[in-house]
Amino acid sequence: MTVTTFIELGSDAGFLHLPDHVVDPPAIDVERFTDHRVLFCTGAEIAGYNDGELMDTLAAVRRLRARADAIEAHALTRLDDLRDGSRYVPDEAALELRMSRHATADRVATARALTDDMPQLLAAMESGQIERHPATKITNTVTHLTSPQRREVDQQLADKLAAGKLSWLDPSRLVRAARRLVTKVDPDGQTDRARRARAERKVELIPGEDAMSTLAADLPAELAASAYSRIDGMARRLRNTGDERTLDQLRADVYADLLLGNDPGAQPPAAAATVFLHMPATTALTLGDDGAELSGYGPLPGPIAREIMTGRNSVWRKVLTDPGTGAPLDLGATRRHPNQAIRDIVAVRDTECTLPGCHRPAQRCDFDHLTEWQHHPDTSADNGAPKCEYHHYLKSEPDWHIDYDPDTGTTTVITPAGRSYRYQSRPPHPTGADNAVPPVAEARANNGSHTAAISDDAPGDTGSDTQTTTDMTSSRTPDEPPF
Image: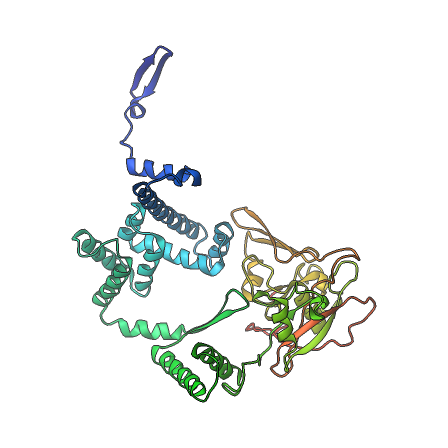
């Protein structure tokens, strides 16, 4: 039996009897208490700080960030445990963290590595010594080690820090030290790790700013060096023959030409693959510069969009819209598998996968029956939306509920935790005859050309100019369900 001792405390206002552990609580961590005061500072207060106070503030913010990162790691690991390691844990967490699924998946992987195998590094985060970003670089070095080997690297790193051989002040050196320790604890695994890394080679398209994107490839080191050397050599030869473009411009243009199958350097590259440009008629006719978008990228300036549209390989296609709402006209059908006209209408209307944070262009997505065919045999734009293959399967996961309103472009997601999220994947179509011509989209490139489209809001047209395309990139055939 536990006996609690009460102590009488009194003043002129009266008396209280409190448990002894409350009267004599554990010592307060003064540093943590002081750090949290920073959260309530205002810009006006900081404007009056001297340099010493500013440095103290920066140090407190760094410690707070590190501790918050450690708490996040514990929370993500616990969520992963509750969901039995489901592949959709990053999707659920991403909605609350307001990050992409891929970025959240990286955080979940880091959290698992820290909590399972690197307790010393996690403790350093909890004490405010190191934040998640450099800690992630360290955990990435031990990804392919066994659990005991990871713990050995973690302990040896902590020992070097305690002995003063390393310092928290130099995170880059910590990462290099971790790499050396990995080689030390697993001297025979370096070749295997290199082979695994090569097996994971990939190409990524990363949208940037100002109508630019980055095409990045993870390649074996010798291939990357050889490819760059060839691109650089071709660019320099063009420069030496009088081309007025800078070397950086020439390298970029040669790179694009080689990938697109053009004659390198003959002229600035033109697209030689399918791209989808969405544009209002007003912008196409130079009556305005708004509303142009490139699928998978986002808004483009009107003049840039017109340059793409008027390129020698461009194919124009009109898309019919309702004059009252601006919505693309539906082409309903009762067959299970959507025809190309329905796919085109859905791609025009929705442009991207309709799940939050997913920007896969609609023409490279699955056609998803909003109400499953077996429950409501209707294959039409009203009962369809684009979903990437990954998110197409997510909707049938236990305790996940996904609803999409094609009229407003609104997705509602309810997660296994019961949290509800409302996401506007596109602005609603304008209504009323006085509104600007509605935005429209394109659906097909011909023989490796890129495409542009302008709207036609004339009612009654049956879309006789419809073209066909197969843009599905799933491992399944385009018409194979899951749903």
